[in-house]
Length: 211
Image 1: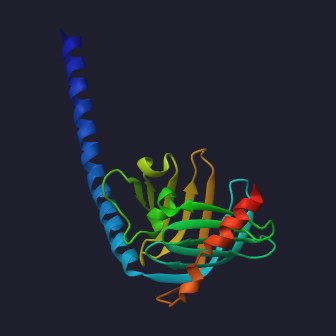
Image 2: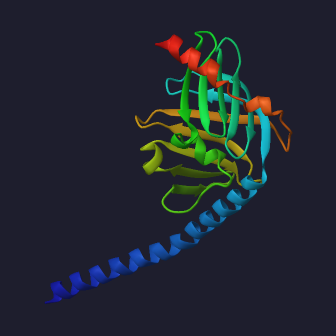
């Protein structure tokens, strides 16, 4: 009988401990959610930006160059030599061009994780947000959309104080990471429409050249 009471009390104490732990974590989760909302609001106000980037590939390879963003939907990466790559999104399609090999790969923007970065506003609704973590210097938001691009995810890191974007990592369906860090960023710049223009005829010709 005494043993049974002891077990009963032990179980009750364990339940209480779990409840207290949940309550202690609730303010942290609420604070992270609030930070995510503030970041989304700030990022939606930044319509254009340009600067330099360093990209780290899944095999440890490192490249750099210049980038240009005009939200919603438009982005361009000019990779420094000898890479020969250029990535452009015109708001509907993304083309990866290899000037050295004279080849091009075309994808719908809506089928890539870049869409979550380039949307009119970071969409925090539904189950798109996997995690939000707030550290002293950076707030990290990991997002996915399984219905659109499967198991691929994008993890964005923002300055905790200014809410400015610092880097993002795209993890593909095989679990391979590509990280882009940005610096020397200018906001509120004006771009000529040609910056994000895709020459679909040339892309089609280059695609045929690849076969």
